[in-house]
Image (cartoon, rainbow, N blue to C red; front, top):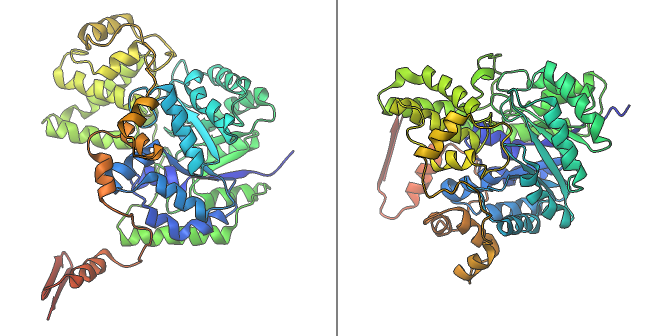
Length: 484
């Protein structure tokens, strides 16, 4: 038996998405990129579509330029990306030729591993990405999005894996547990069932530590034949993120497994991000206690805080528990969509509307009607008939009862922006209004990171301004005044 285990790093993608609200900047990454390349990872997960979204809308950084800069420094380890179904960065389907162009530009800018996931585990939706990726000659993977429900059986995941492999467009299968729901008992049935039909195709395990048991689940998965594990480097590990590379490596070696990662380099990378967290008051991952309630509502952590805020603003904060119950009920009525983007948002929004209006499905968002009618793919279970009637009755009449294919979009996009690059055109297609213009207007993004406290940086910046004769900085526990 092969006793080696591969590690796929998620520090630069999913870890800060979970712990820093995806606010890791390019300047945070570049100073440590060469060390990450030398750490011995099988792959480095750099970006999904949410990273593109946050770069454009909040950080005002060109996400394509980030990829290119990182690729110049990371020369040995393949950079990895994940495409969300046929939505990419939107909550609606995009035309197939837009997906093809998106994948082409991902590869052109430096990604050598491209995969896809779908919240309904609809293979046809994932193949829209993997077919193009395979044709371009890069390594590909298809994700099995994990969830708990009567329809998310081992048989479902085995059949989905078989279809992906039979397509000839995937090099690996990723078991993706975004909700942190996998248990040791379930992994003992699911991994052997998958390995039985996968042959030599590698199985990756991607988990989150929301219930505190993911590290133990990882060890059990490896014993049962999993080939690669997704980990992040502490302090950007644990909590809502992945298990820590440091502790997973230690535990695997104690069990006699071989890993190619360099512990000294890993520690250097961890120290880099620890310094940033301290200087910028960013949270670090904490080991969480087991929480059985999480398995009931399955709601991602960020959504829980948003729910509380929405109910507070509406003056009905006392209905929080009722909202969680309503989420579970809506999800069941809709045929158990997985609580990941975009379906977690769909279920949550409908539940909020049901609670706020006091009448269930009186107000129906367009996305809910499209979901119920199959616009997002084949449903794993039918929508309850009485609920479907309410959705059709109260949803937008402009949404047809039968989905129709989207018209090609690339030709019109190029005509609309004749002087832009395809990279810029795709951003403009994904992000409405002035968001791309605002990003471009921000100028060249910061690529160097200065390790000094934000107050010191502020004082230096103010002191450079002409006609500055006095600087006064005051905050709890600190009072600085500079004159002259």
